[in-house]
Amino acid sequence: MSDAVASIRTSRGPWATALRRLSRDKAAMACLAIFCLIVVLSLLAPAYASFANTDPFRSSLDATVEINGVEVPVMEESTEGLALGYTPIGPTWQLGNYFLGADNQGRDVMARLLYGGLNSLLISGAATIITMVLATAIGLTAGFFGGMTDTILSRILDVLWAFPVYLLAISLSIVLIAQGIDLGIIVVEAGSLWLPIFIIAIVYIPYIARPIRGQVLALRRSEFVLAAIGLGVPEHRILLRDILPNVSTTLIVFTPLMLAINMLTESALSFLSIGVQPPDASWGTIIQDGQGLLYTRPMVALAPGLAIALTVLVLNILGDGVRDALDPRSKIKLGGD
Image 1 (spheres, rainbow, N blue to C red):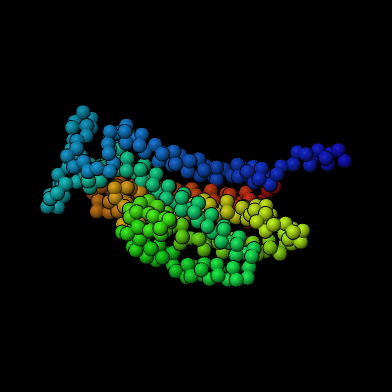
Image 2 (cartoon, rainbow, N blue to C red):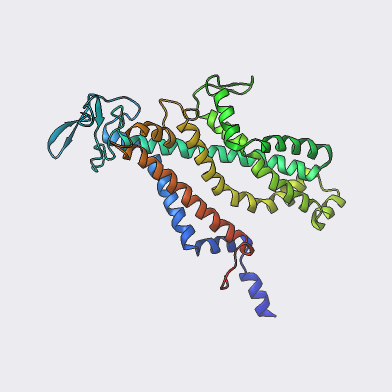
């Protein structure tokens, strides 16, 4: 009997157990470390620009750089084809000294890469938070109250679901990017980073709200919820205390995956010039800047492309690790915990 009591006292809670499983997943932990490193490096963008003594948002066509004691112009005269125009300097591999070279306006690619990462992470992170909050509110309301409330909200979600994601995002961006949003209380100026944030957040709401609604419908018929309703517990208390904690694991699993998807969407919109607007930069806009330099200075487009691929990869692996930690039944395990 004493052994059973001791076992109960030393047992771990579900969150502690999930955290222990996640910490034992070496691939997920490595990806978490890489993602944290990417975030830290992006946050250091202003410090790097100050260290390199460069303004990544201003053209520097007449700038020079010292390499091995020799003064070299950032924009070199072209020696290919008809030898017309200028070609930006390539990577010097010297930190603070055009490490990744310059773009077609003489701007430091490394500094722009860090600033672009900062904006890409900001947009994808903010869009993910807004999507999660709105989708959770819609899913909880539709699934719990049912009836006409569920019908109206479900039809709205169906309308959004009917549009291909990128087609809807591009359509909204083309309409809003030039004129902004003016809803009286909410005013977003054209060119603001909040525009791509809101656009990306809106188009992905059905992809979170629909599974949350389905889960809430199942919980609504569970015994502990029916018992709470029978005892006269207020509906808002049931939603917050009984139902929301049971769907929180689903939201946590969706978070890193939505971060990755939102980053890809933001990069695509920015590449098409309907996302982040100059003078701001993102990884998508930097790829667009390097499109015309693919054959002479491929690093301008290659660096942000690799950054996007790496970030999306680590977020997907991390998301798989979080899913397996919170729901061990989703993965066939050969050994025990």
